Amino acid sequence: MKNRILVFFSFFLFIFHIPSIYSNPKKITVLGTGYVGLVSGACFADFGNQVICADIDKQKIEQLQSFYIPIYEPMLDEIVIRNAKKGNLSFTSDIDNAIQSSDIIFIAVGTPMNEQTGDADLRALKGAIEFIARNLIEYKVIVIKSTVPPGTCAWVEKFLAEECGIEPEKFSIVSCPEFLREGSAIYDFLNPDRIIIGSHSSEAFNQIYQIHLPLKEKNVPIINTTLGAAELIKYVTNSFLALKISFINEIANFCDAIGVDVKTIAYALGLDKRISPLFLNPGPGFGGSCFPKDVAALIKNAEKNNVDLQTLVAALKANEKQKEKPFEKLKKQFNNNISDKTIAILGLAFKANTDDIRYSPSIRLIELLKEHNVTIKAYDPEAMKNMQKIFPDIYYGTSVDDTIKNSDAIVVMTDWNEFKNLNWNYIKNEMHENSVIIDARNILDGQELKQLGFKYDAIGRAFLNSYKYKRAGCFLYNYAMCL
Ligand code: UDX
Image 1: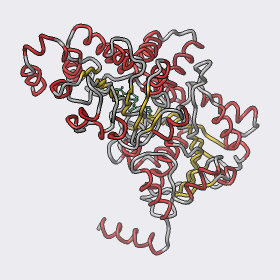
Image 2: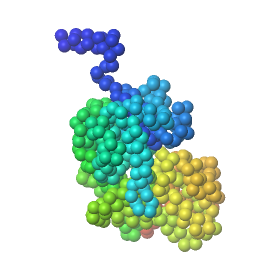
Image 3: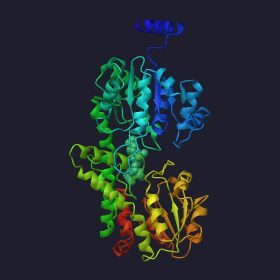
Image 4: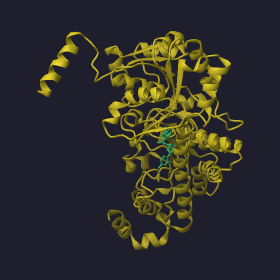
């Protein structure tokens, strides 16, 4: 009987073209078409909502309207183009009209670090709020997805009510931070560990809860909390991950000093369920548009409240030192006389699967090499055009082969898959005598490279050069790793 009613009801809805209650599409505008705004807009469109992505950058909007995606993010072009063609997703630089056309306004503009003060630069956010203030004719839910210091949403509420004279019943503010990693942003949006919705309006919470229902059906926890807690959860998450990376980087440096393999240490550490194996890969230091700025902003925000986050201050300091490790190791391999050498850098992006070089450790490496009159050749599958804006005068290779030819050393700085299965026997013959490999991501087989005659060093793997290791062979090491 129940099924018959359901079938009739669905038929009724279909005939009268009443939108299905099961999809309950919302009208959403996303302000900001960077990787957060574009990914969020495209995915909400994919959930069946009507989404407008708006940006003041007319050129970027024209590119999007002609289906050119101006950022490198795997799978983004497919989901954007599919939904744009379906009519679920559109792009405009007419911000006013975009705001008036929707019930839910997401703010996904950049909040970069103020290099002088370490504070989050909220100018773009304020610009978005001023646009919204001009267009709050009827009730709207304003969702701040940009990473903003705790207290920002409360400031927005006050600004709209007191500075702009908007009646409180015309808007609700929601904090809905994102946890998207560059290079896997689509996956992370569709498979979040949790969704955070900060608000003090049940109506607003319900609206934002509704648009996340497709994820709720995958049993993703949805946390209903306050505005301040939601803002802080984002900073605390990024800061803890950054702290974890600085911790393993320092342990790796200690492993180098005592001839222990950091891979074994990190493996055993990660087996402790309280720690988890993720974000325990030592490297040249963390970069990107988030960790450095978010840790600095949290430290600054705490300082303003007379709290000294010493662990995070130490994490940032350790990170800046770590960025010099690849150069130090390289110099040591040439007995501190590196000038007139030709150095090939493989990897410029701050991590694999992105073209983003913001705060990339490769920037620090190039700066140091340039101070020592070194010939630099660089290659990255995606990030070279961005690095050329900073260092136009170094050689950018057309391939790995072109870049390593006639070099004295290779420094692997980004964990691109392309660098994980190179033909080192061939490479050895293309490089100068006594060639050096600095594997700043621990992605190469150090033992194989040493057997081929390379001088090899990595991060926390100096044990490979120790006599004891050679005598004991690698049997025990490999056996331990196979356990
Ligand atoms: C980060 C957060 O992960 C994401 O949740 C947030 O929304 C934005 O900031 P992202 O900066 O894109 O994402 O990259 P992530 O994968 O977190 O790596 C950050 C940096 O840490 C990179 O430089 C990466 O190479 C480095 N890293 C990461 C390590 O050095 N070791 C690790 O084990 C993991």
